[in-house]
Amino acid sequence: MDKVDLFPVTAEISDGHISHIGGVDLVQLAELHGTPLYLYDAATVNGNYKNLRKYLDQQYQGRSQIAYASKAYLSLKFAHKMAGLQSAIDVVSFGELEIALSAGFPADKIHLHGNNKSEKEIRLAISKHIESIVVDSLDELQFVEAISKEMGQVPRIWLRINPDIAVDTHKAVQTGHGASKFGIPADNGKALHAIQSARESKYLTLTGIHTHLGSQIFEAKQFSRAIDALLGLCKEAGWHPDIISPGGGWGIPYTEESTQNDPEAWVQAISKAVQNWCTRENLPLPELIIEPGRWLVARAGVALYRVGATKETRDGEWVAAVDGGMADNPRVALYGSQYTAELVGSANDRPIVKTRLVGRFCESGDELIHHIMMPRLQRGDLVAIPVSGAYQVSMASNYNLADRPCVLWLEDGKVEILQNRELASQTAWWLGD
Ligand SMILES: Cc1ncc(COP(=O)(O)O)c(C=O)c1O
Image (cartoon, rainbow, N blue to C red; front, top):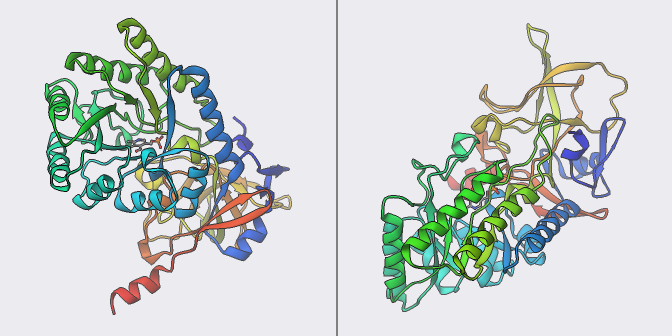
């Protein structure tokens, strides 16, 4: 695929060099806000959401919802944007839940996930009457029930099922195989027991059934299998859910070598599987909730870095170090993720050389791109890395006491700060005082 298709839809690229996103000049942004700098393009986020909504409307005949998996990236202002699109939201922590509530997500559009929710998180979810607490184990079922009883409330819950479906993705982001820590096993009686207990409980209302197979998945058929597994289990339990969710996980391209991956195939596979089942069994269509994170926001995000030191290795490879790296983007070190990059502005006829783009942190694994052919970078250059909108800032750390980066929202030539640069050294100073 073309490199331009990896950047946000508003990216202006001429002569192979990127200059603007969302109508805003990248050189000026870097000067004003410093680097590393993360940019989100409004048109790409909004367009992705609308396309997905359109596919659901076309493919699924029952009620349906998109719930943004906010672990991909969340800040208060970003949550406002997603709430404005009428999205629902998947949260996994007290912080994410608080932000979703503060940003104005209606309680009935919030789902609390996680394999080890704290009492504090469960209490907040119950007291705010959110749409669902997605119960991950039999232990948690008892825990939530005990808290509900004590609070005199009857929260709505879903059960997260582990259907033992292995998907072709990095092992760290496979979540639906038998050995995964997530979900209640579908096939050893535990899930049946959970459904029965939840239905019998006076302190819980079981409304939904859920699974999540993993992330960066490109095989639509695995989602059909998951739906069949969930509905098969419900049939065995003699119960039909009001809501069904096969989670998120649809993959996206990160480099020119990847193929385009339109999510229509994903939505179609899920919709057909639910519809076929319900027609065959003569059952009403449950509400279908999909939970994309990466697909909605990754392409909207661009990471901007300033090049510092450069050197040539013994083997003649050009090594350019930027002012960020594994602290703002741990994905390369964690999953061996591949990226591409583009020089911002003109290259002035520089030679194209084999380049290794590395970070500034004290670890050899701190690389952003192992090999890329680029104009020979030099100190002061700006480099843009596309497809940086998911699981980067949200997974950022303060390693080497790095400041977590500033994040901007770019829309029609206007710039809004989503998140200020964090002053990690100052925080550490006060902590030790
Ligand atoms: C329960 C659940 N839903 C949805 C997602 C989103 O996955 P992705 O960003 O790959 O779409 C995740 C990611 O871990 C998840 O755990």
